Image 1 (cartoon, rainbow, N blue to C red):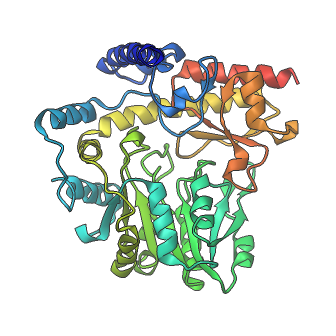
Image 2 (image 1 turned 120 degrees about the vertical axis):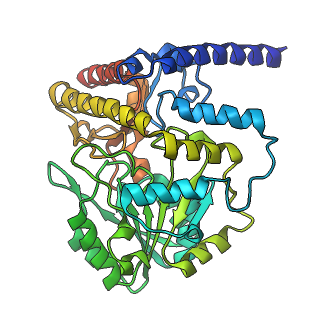
Length: 414
């Protein structure tokens, strides 16, 4: 009876959420996204909104609360109605490779052949395969901290040694400390792991910085694993530059990870793409994944084709709304939370907030208990993340505002 009661409750919640999102998606503009409320989103059957009780505002895991583009939903519906869900073609569904190559060429100037792409089911899988393809156990992997947790996991879980180079903050930007990076290299160094746009600080590296980094990796003959999953989420005056586009020599030492899941809000469909101009390097990457790294399912491939070929207007509107949220967070923190340091991200929909002046034992626990807001604990982003928290502002303006008000009130009550 309890199982039936729970199933009925889930079904009721699902119907309520679908109805609310259907009404919004019919007239989806940046302004209409303001109508997304916690009451609607609490019915959403996903990890972000079901991890905590309903009185908690979840601004943690990196996916958006916005309805998916109508073009993507239409493509998925058509596939469901016409497909028998058999195995997809070995090289991908018709149009998948072509749409991806066209996007990389038209948006980023990258010339690639179909054989230089490898689709997999997640970017995290790509991080693990890349680390194993480019190094041996006990060898060293350099990375910039704070950094997305799976970077460290991919190194530690495979028996390599993570070497952390702390990013510098000059008051306006987060930057690479090249002097410290040079001092961190040893004869055992094999890989530099790059995250651009950077998660969690939101930095979009300039051409000058990337070229200097390119000189560094060539000098020390390092392989590069470049996570560029947030490439399509850059704000005005900040253009994403693929690391592999810097030169032929750099391209030959780089595996790049890219995909539609962050920009088009389809993380649950599980699809990612790795590419490299170095055929032998990509072959090692592919071989290591045999029997372990799953291929994207047919729905993920269908959604990707639609996103790349039909989703540009949706993405432009979404970026416009995200920019408004980004600027709102910056203004609120500056005016209402002077105890917290914050630099507006140049890309991503993530704000990196410095609570260290408050000397809290556990930032995440404080925010959950006292503010009823769920953010990512900065400590999970490496040894330079202590005292910070990551806030995901890809939700309605009202929810962002309510979360910040709760945080302000909790901080003022200390």
